[in-house]
Amino acid sequence: MFTILRVSLLLIITLYCNAIFATDAHQSTTSADNKISKANSSQSGEPFVGPASEAKKLYKRYKKASDKTIIAIACVRSPNCVESEDEVLRYSKEALRILQKLDELSAQGDIQANYYRGLIAYERGKYYDSQAELITHPDFILTATVYRRYAKQQFLLAEKYFSLPAKEKNPYACQYLGNVYSSMILGAPRKDKATNYYYTAAIQFISQGNKIDGAKMYNAMKENANPADSRIVEVYAKLHNEEPIAAWRKFSGEAVQKPISKQAQPH
Image (cartoon, rainbow, N blue to C red; front, side, top):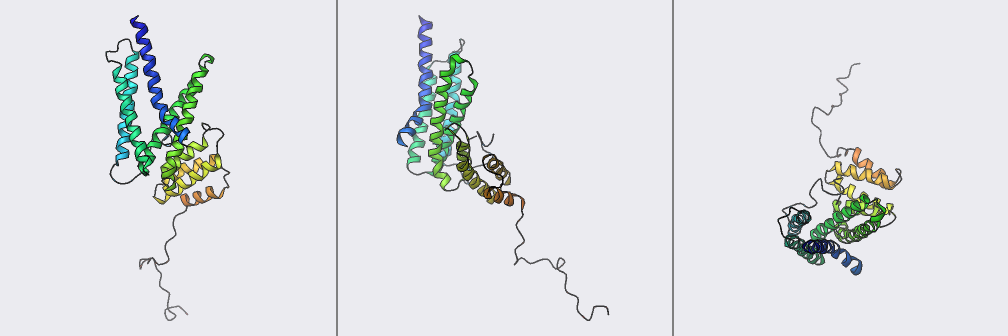
């Protein structure tokens, strides 16, 4: 009897956690979200300059709460677990509260809140999609379908939340939107739209002196558009051509050859 109750409780906990991960996705589909290779799941640089904002701190807190939830679930599933099931609920509720706070800041037009909320959704969408890819047994096809549905919902959220920082030409937000539109999670890839976002990201990265990430965007553009596309040609030129020396810049006296006077010229 105890074993049956324990199994039932574990099932409830698992469903509860999945509900937490999908709650904000459901809100996206009814109310019309927020990384990732370093281009898929993590960043090679900071998307915003200056000290950490409240939104970034909330993002870090969410990551900790989410990681602790995963560990707590693994512990409960182990026969040697000494922790109570309440730990799972405690950490998952904390993660949900953080998401709600980020949602509030995003609704107020906070650009960084929109970015980090979008990043959470993007990462979760990638996770669900990867889990679906692991399922090949025909008896578990329904589970794979559920994972893909969650992945799509999260990518819709990422699309929603990244749109605001992308309008401000944040290169990281544009990069992630390019990834969203070039993937098959939302259906057929929208390659031209993806190329547009990769192009904006590339131009912004290069203008910041970040040619490494600019080159990554250039390669992403080539995968989605004809290599002769004017956007690709422009980015290639910016990556490989150095800025010419300004006409007003003075050369050192040694670099400038003075004209030879007629008197000094040999007859």
